[in-house]
Image (cartoon, helix red, strand yellow):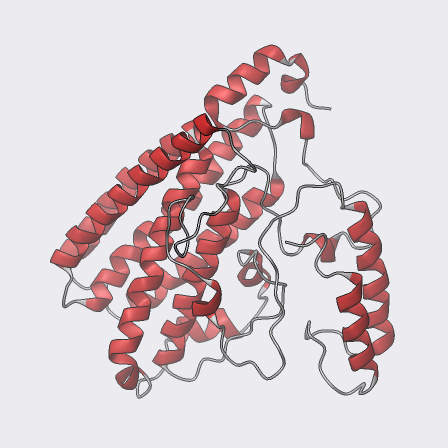
Length: 361
């Protein structure tokens, strides 16, 4: 992500076009006067200078144009790939300029993740090749689990005094909140009607929790990539379903849970997990079941982008951070630079070699 949210040149162009018509909606959707927008511009630019030395998320935030009704996911989201191969061309691994030893470790981790994901996919394809809603119920039951596991390990790190990152906890909770509503939608559609589907999903979820917590403890990078693979599969599954059943879905009424989640109340948590875009720039329109599944699919793409960004340690940044701290002189919050470590081995090593690691101010 660029420093803060937008460069000053972009703000200038937006402000100029905005001033020509005070009745038009701004790109953010919640500023109604040019003076207030200009004020945000000045304070955000000042905030970007203060944040310049911070390691920000490398995912580029985008603003939807006013006439944009749908999220162009296919253009920005790419399925799982090894770090060294993307669209047939080499790309940088999650770590900036990793050494050769780190590079082969990353490739090994990702190869294991892809093998595990593909194996599970084959089992699900066999059991649910003609039962869409039960398959979605199983997927969404286990989809929340990694974020629970991540938060559990993060709380453990904080308790040991190794590191504290409130933004990670907040974003991961928002991700689990989003996946929970996906699950509620599938239950409303009858995906959990058969006891076997409930039994299978719940027991997979228990095993998946301990596996993910263990993986995250050893290597957060590997755990995040595994979640990226899972979210990539979820995106592909919903995308195929929409293309195959789109005409039928357009004739069916929307889920009540979906209407409430996507269009009503405080949408703070809905914006929070989408770290690749600015808050308030995606507001779904739910008119039928087709719209519901379109938005669930797009949610999975946003999860995948966030998981990809997380594979570089300290790279995640809450999309609300700059708006919340725009008038603050110091937005460091609970981040403790001296207490950063990755994985249990690295944390134990640094706690021994750095006495200040276990003594937070």
